[in-house]
Length: 75
Image (tube, rainbow, N blue to C red; front, top):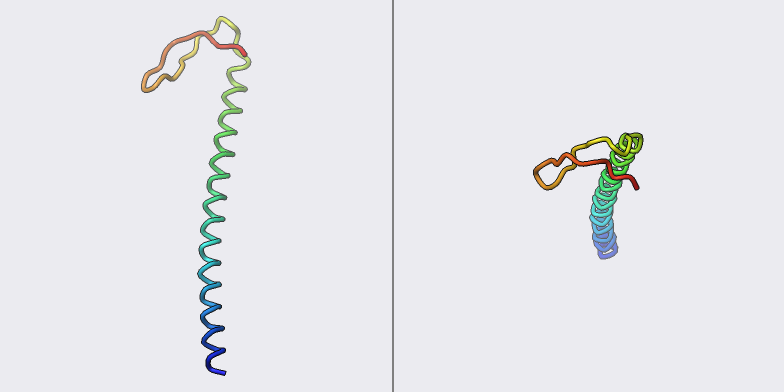
């Protein structure tokens, strides 16, 4: 009887460890999903703001650590 209790306790602790690891992985995936959603939202806002500009408008384009004054690139 005592041997079964020890085995059950060991199995239960292993399950708890696996649950904690899985919970951490799920939280990391949720954080990554939120980051992707935020990036997508920023892209959509930028696209919306620049799509209404005329062809001859001048805008600053980020290139490395500098900004260049360029014409709007229409797709």
